[in-house]
Amino acid sequence: MKFADKVVIVTGGAQGIGMAISTAFAREGAKVVIADIDAEAGLEHEARLREIQPDARFVPTDVAEEADVRRLIQTTWDTFSAIHIVVNNAGIGSRGTLWDRPMAEWDRVIAVNLRGPYMMAKYAAPALVQAKPGVIINIASTRALMSEPHTEPYSASKGGILALTHALAVTLGPDVRVNAISPGWIEVSDWKKSSARQTPVLRPEDHAQHPAGRVGRPEDIAAACLFLAGPEAGFITGTNLVVDGGMTIKMIYEE
Ligand code: NAD
Image 1 (tube, rainbow, N blue to C red):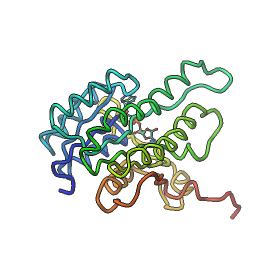
Image 2: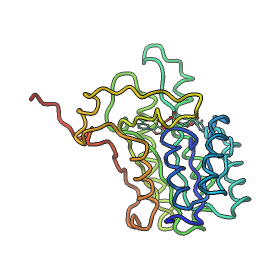
Image 3: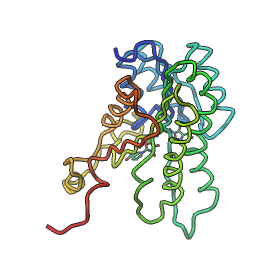
Image 4: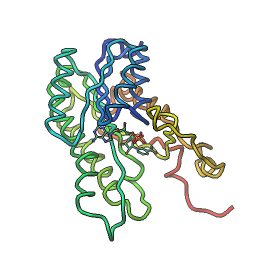
């Protein structure tokens, strides 16, 4: 019970990587608040988490909306009188191409993926400073470091979150440690609300292109989160932990 009595907010915590992160913290005794825009997924996962840790709670939240973020932080504070750890995991991809993408798409991706984590940090900061040490973990992406065509809004939002991470680490240190995790290819099919669950379709070559020999799992990111949130990471702040099975360090070469 490494995180017994710790209060942890996980945005986008109802499905995918966030579902694995919230589950991992609950298994270590934490009081977990899942903040998600999807009420069906949120309520379903809240019930599952309560079987592990009875204090788990779902708060419907759109992280792009300032009023929602303020209500989430206030509700968490009113319920538990503390916030120790914030995991900014909620994120969306970008659709369309450079040629046809409406500007509203850029605005929405930046609002969810970058404005959201900034507002979470801004409004949770007083409680995190009191927690001493408080912890913020921002889920970025290897797309902050490398791109395929037409991912501009997503890549820019994830590059921005890396800069936000070191800026916050400087502002909030030494009371709050702030780090990012950049996942590579993570297969989330098994970690969806029951109405959306699908059988994962992965080819042997998908695994083979990773030096680690496989595509990532949400549990891999949850394990990195627990490490960065715990006392073993007490001297780590402002950094980016790439968790990608070696995908981004592999050179193009011929056998
Ligand atoms: P997912 O779509 O499976 O789950 C995202 C969750 O966030 C969902 O429950 C969704 O309802 C919620 N959400 C979406 N918009 C929201 C909003 N505005 N406010 C609150 N909640 C919202 O996604 P995932 O694959 O688990 O990704 C989680 C994070 O990891 C994202 O930030 C994503 O960019 C990042 N990431 C994922 C991968 C991957 O391969 N899956 C790789 C790199 C980075």
